[in-house]
Structure formats: C-alpha cells, structure tokens
Image 1 (cartoon, rainbow, N blue to C red):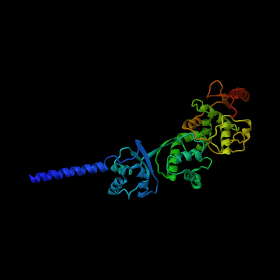
Image 2: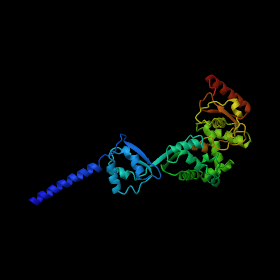
Image 3: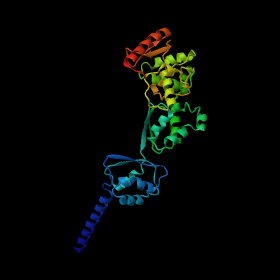
Image 4: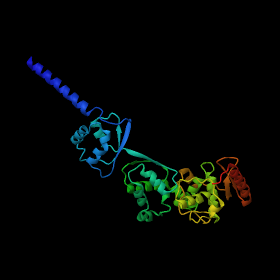
Length: 342
C-alpha cells in the first residue's frame, strides 16, 4: 500500500515537472504584437549578435539560451532571414533560427542601374555600393561582352526567389543566368535578322517601353525606330532626351511631360536628336512585352509618330514628314490648351 502511494506521488511529481517544463519552454515566449515578423542575421554574425538582435523580441532570453545551448545552436549560427510568429515558444524560436526563408525579390520600371541597386539593397543584404561595384567589375563586363553603359540590359523585370544573405557576386551570376536563359535560340535568331545584338534589342525596347504602355501598338512603334535605323536616320526619340536631361541634373525623380525645342540640343550621347544610332545603353528597364515587340516588330513604311489627341494614350503614325507635321501641330495645340509647359 505504501509502495502504491509512493509511486502515485512520484507520478504526480513527474507530471508537475513535465508541466513546468512545458510551460517554461513550449508556451509563448515572443514579445511582439505582430502576427509575423522577419529578423535578419547578417553574414558573419555570431551567437552574441543573435542574442542582441532577438533580445527585444523574446520575453525570456534565459529560456531561449538554455534551449539554444541544448540544441548546439551557438556553434551553428546561420546568417539569413528568419520568420518569427506570434506565440512561438523558446523551442520553436531556436528551431526557426535554423530555417533561412527566401526573399521574393521583385523589380521593374527602373531607369538605370543605380536606381535598381537601391531597390535591391532594400530587399537583400548587399548594399548599393557593393552591388554597383560587382556589376561594374571590369573583368565581368569584358568576359560577358557588356560595358558600364549597357550592363543594365542584363536585368529582366520579374520576381525572383533568393536568400536575403545572397552575396553580390552570386546575385550577379543569377541575373546573368536568367538573361542567358531568356535569350533563346529563337530570340537570338530574330535579333540577328534585325542586324541587332540582344543588348541593342533591349536598348530599342527601352525606348519603345517609354513611348507607350499600350501593348497593341508597341510593335508598330518598334517598326518606326527600326525603319529609322535602317535608313540611317536619327532616332529622334523624346524619351532619350528626357533621360539625358535627368542624367545632366542627376535627378531621376523629376517628372518631365514635355520636351522643349531647346532640350533637343542637349550635349549627351543619349540625345538621339544629335546622335545617329542607338544610345550607349538602355534608358530604362523594358518589360518582356516591349522586348518581344522589337523582335516581332510590325513591317510598315511609317517613319514618324506622335501622341494622338483623339485616342488618349495612343499614337498616330505617318509615312511622310508633311503628314507628321499636321499630326504634331494638333498635339502641340492640345498641350498648350492643357497648360503643359514641362
């Protein structure tokens, strides 16, 4: 009888002990109100760095530290991005700090590499300076046939899944792989048929991209610029002048809705009114639709186009300069009526 009482008492003690352990290590130990919270552990961090980063987010660091030591975490700290959830226990927190969560990296509509790097550095660990230095690396440029002016053509707008702590060099390799994968044999053959390289196609596409958001007329606009190139004419593309103005002012946040006559004389290699042929590189990051619009450009005899005043967002096209003058005059009058001076 006494033996049964002793066993029963030990059983109760054991259950109490288990309950204490459960409450202490397997119930909520987080100290934030959001349902989810990402924490980033920089490359080269040690256990002390992790403790400092997690300290404001954990209710009882001693519990976390005890579990971390039991699970050999201090010797196996991982850099990366980790997802904490409200209500996590100390045990779950330690387990979570072993699972690096990828970033869904998205970018589009960037006008130059500097802007892109600023956007990238807000989503992954390498900073703007490191990214730019890596993309502009002379050895990389020479090996892959790029220049500082046209390496921007390598970046295709999309959503990519990468780890937050990816190095600048590995990210560059990923973008080059995506670029090479995009330029299939079929696309390369189409570029050759136009007497253009892939980089030159993207330069034309960047102008087409800036000229119109209407997918239906992009092949027509691309055909105009290809006709001008084939005839040895200046492209006379307003978006290149706008780019040159922004580059001169070092201000890519300014909005320029109207190109003035005096703007056409700006001294810049990007000014396609003064310079025959393509600009040194893309003036924007064209979307895939604009690139394919160039590769599948409409065949016609149009040489000129300007914005339509009857169909907002679209353009009117002309084969002769006389007809273009009529169209351009209508548009200039409409701009004046709107009071658009810049």
